[in-house]
Image 1 (cartoon, helix red, strand yellow):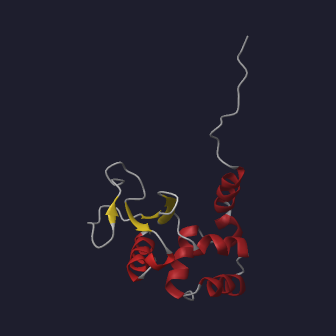
Image 2 (image 1 turned 120 degrees about the vertical axis):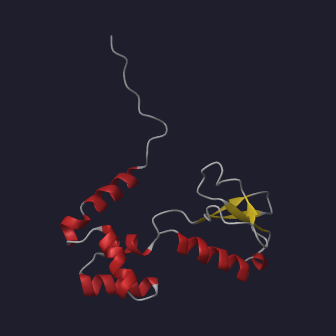
Image 3 (image 1 turned 30 degrees about the vertical axis):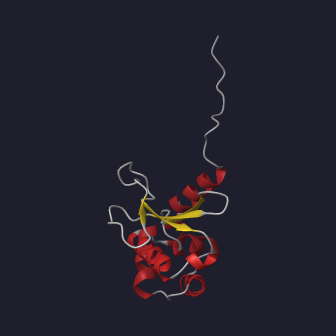
Length: 143
C-alpha cells in the first residue's frame, strides 16, 4: 500500500506564491518586465516612496500593489535581531567589505549568508550617522 503524502512543515507561505504569480503576469498586464519598471523608475521616477507610487499609478497606470513591489529592494539588505534582552544586532548585507568603525564581521560572507556585518544597538542613541551610512551603503549595493 502506498504511503500517504504529508504536507511539509517547511512549505512556503501562500503569499509567496501570490507574489510569484503577480510578477509572472506583470509583462502581460503592463507591457513591461520588472527590470523594465525598475529601469524606468531609476531613470525618471521621483525620489520619495509615496511620490513614486503616485507617479507609477497616475502616469503609467500601475496598480498600487505593483507600485509597492517596485519601490522596495529585491533582497534583504538589513535586519534586526535580538542579541540579549537589552541589546540588538543591526545586520547589513555588505558582502566582503572590510570592517571599520563600529561595524563587526558576522562571518556571514564565508558562510554565504546574506547578512555579513552588524552593529550593536543598545539604545536609540546608537542609531547615528554611522548606522545611517551603512544602511545607505547596504541599500545601494542591493541591485
